[in-house]
Each structure stands twice: as C-alpha cells, then as structure tokens.
Image: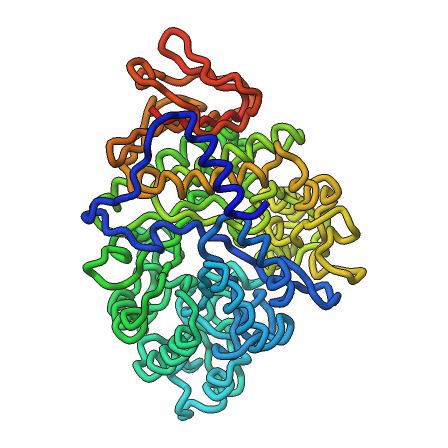
Length: 591
C-alpha cells in the first residue's frame, strides 16, 4: 500500500474520535526534522542482493525504495558502506571516501541517495571515529617506522618500556587490546579487533584529515551521521593502570577520555555546524548523555544508547532466562530516567533493536508461538512509536523477524561471538563453550544480521544465488514481506498504521510531555503523553497473561482507541477503575 493511501486510511479512521489534532507547535519546543523522524536502519550486507553473490548491496536497496517509502519512515541509516577487509563487517574502514566493492560503486550510491531524496527520505551514514582498519594507508605508513609522518595517527607503546598496562578487547581471542608488531618492536592499541587499530585523536593533523572525509559525504548531499563509539575517541596517552573504584568497567573507563568533549566540539565547529544535518553519537550507557547532547555544548543532536545494557543479566535465583516483566521494568526505568535527564536540554533516542543486538521480538517480546510473536512485535512497535524522542527501527523488525538461534559456532560470522567462544574453549573447556553458544542464541549479534525475508522463495527472496553470506532464518516461509502485505493483521500492516499515527499526532507523541501511569505495575508499561491540549494514554501489557492497569484517567474522559493490536473491536475493557489488557495487548487511547 502506498504511504499516502495508508495515511489517508488512518486519518479517516481517526475522525471517528471526533477530536481535532493541532499541527502548530509551540516555538519553545524547537521542532526540527530530526526530532520528528522515524529512522529505519539498514544493514546493507543483509538487506537485498541484486547480483546473486549472496551479499546485500546498494542496488538491492535501490530496488526496494518504494517499499521503504511505503513504511512511512523519514530517514534511512546505512551501516558502513566504505571499503573494508570486513574483519568486523565494515566497521574496520580502509578508505573513508569510497564505496566497498561488495556493495557496488559510487554511481550506485549517488543513485541511491537521489532516489531517497526524490521520495522525501533522508540518508545518514554510519561512521567509525575510534579506529580504522589496519589496511588503511595511514596505518600501513604508521607501522613502517617510528619516524614515519603517520606514526602518531595511531597509539603505539614501545616494547622497551615493557608490556603495556592491560586494556580489554571483546574482539580479541586473548581479550587484550594491545597487539605486538615486530616491524618496529612496539605494541599498537585496538579497543576492538586486532585489525582495528585505534586512531590517535590527540594528534590534530589526524583530526583535520578525518574531518575532510566527513565533509566529503556531506558535500555529496547526505543528511548526517551516526558516529560509532564516539565516546571512545579520547585516550590518556600515559596509559595508567585503571582505577576500578572510580570506573564500573573497561567500557566505562573508555568513555571518559580527558579530551572527548574537546574533540567532539571541534568536530561540530569543523564539520557539523556547517550543514543542516542529523548527528547521532553512540557509546555505552555509563556516560551522561546530556553532556553530549545539550545544544549549548554544540556536540551531537542526540546520543544513541540502548536499554538492553541496563537489563539484569540473570534472575534473582541465578537463572539466565530473564523474564519479560523484569525486562519491562528495566525498560520503564531506563526511558523514564532518560526523559527526566534530557527534559530541558538535549534530546532522547528510542531504540529496541539494531545490528549489535538480538532481534527485538525475541529479546523484548515473546516468539514462543506465532500469535504471541505477532502480538508482542506489535506491542513493541507501539512503544517505540509513542515514546518521546527520535525513533530508531532496525530493518526486519517491521515484519517481526526473530532470532535465528544458530546451533554451531561455524554458523556464526560475528567476530565477538567467535572471539569469546575461542577464548572460553581454550580456558574453560567444551562444556563452558557449549553454554556460551546457548547464551548466543538469546543475545548474539548475528541473530539480527540474517538476510531480510522478502518472500517464501528460496533464500527468502534475498538473493537469486544459492548461498547467502549468513544463513537465512528457517521461518522465512511464514515470516516475510510478501505474506504480510496480504495479511491485514500482520506486523507489517500494523507498523504502517503506527507510523502514520505518530506523524498524525506529532505535537503530542513527539514533543508532548511524558509521565508514568501506574508506575509500579509488574507487567504493564503505561504512560501519558500530553501536548497542545491533547492527552494520549498508552498501555502495553508486557506478558503472555491477562493484566490490569490503573484507569483513573479514563473516568471523566471521552476516550477513543486510536490503535489496538487486537483488531476484534472489543474496545476498552474497564471495570472498577482498572483497564484490562489481554496477553501482549497494546492500546493507544485519546482522552
């Protein structure tokens, strides 16, 4: 269904509520396009393959631009498309101003960008600032000699000083962030893979060269950047022992370099401040996001932090199977705290899934049965589309894709999974390694990276070839775009309705106040959005059992249900001051 047709359909439905929405925003709310955007993240390698080689590419995305437009999204975020040896699937960049040959050509990129802009869709790119590939010309020069002009583009520790103080890397089989290089008898720093040496942001020449690459793409017409691990760029170059009485973890320490804000503010002056662009920083949950997003500081528009990191890793009894109600309570606390922190300055992001996380439905929802999978996906979409902040969706979540749950380490491509598995196998043995694989079925990154499921054709319609770079989820004959286009109850159709609703009620759902309702309810996340003399109540049951939530707000109102993932027209079920919700039911109610 075309976006305009769907929006008209939703508007006609909403007129039954017989209440007017207001389109004029209070100037004090400082409305901008990037606050109002619904962002759709595309992992190019997994989205669509146009040439049959089993790897997604830019022309594959071009072929699906009308589909992307039909979703109602405003911005597409592409994971890295720059040349790379793919040690970490493009996050190890060897050239910041070209296109990876796996994905196509610069002509393909120009056509993709033009096609998006013709459809009213903006494009932002994923940019890695903490490190490059070890195959980048800068690093190739840097390691030639200690006197090379590019030596100080990276962090080196001369071996005659002894073994450097320990730094941790999740992506190294030895879990060490230092790698010895015999050519100059020195160690180089790599917070991530051995093939991802950390750039030396303390070097002003390196910074200026990096800014040139950033301006290259903005001058071509892209609409902004998502800056990967932006908070890691600054280092204490004395590399002291880490004081863990001050820092929670290595990641916490990495986020608090002595000059991180100096460099990001310079980046704004040299790059961002010269363009009308969206800027999204990314890092760990241990930072104060207000420091990065307060507009007066001139760093980023917003900061990309996901709630998965604040969920307990196990239940109080030690079980690793954290239940949906416990996850919901962590989610509720996280987003309520974020809203409070960024209420008067800065701007929040709203995220439940991406390329570094398990599938949204499997982690936050319930994929134990097809019906619960559908309902829980729709409930999660409801949360994302009604929360205050800029909304990020990951490609495939709009059709309810779930975890693939690979059985064998050979099926995994992710360097994190492979590195940890190798380390556990060598240090703790086969039983511990098998337990780790069970955990990866729940939390591994490759769960989100399986190819997009377009149809019930072989390989889910992702490619005309016989193989794919990562195995397709076996449920693709049931869960795919073509099937859901034909099903009025599908996750895809609900996504479009929810997206249209957010745009229709933009003054309230984007800019309106957020306040909790029934704040201690064990299974229902309920909140009120208020803006421009309009109130919208959202109630979402995060469980597979019936639940009730306080309905005091409905008492003196004339409520109208704007959105409900149960489409049997039962409406509101209110009794004795309580609103009853069925399993994974989500209702959006205009008061």
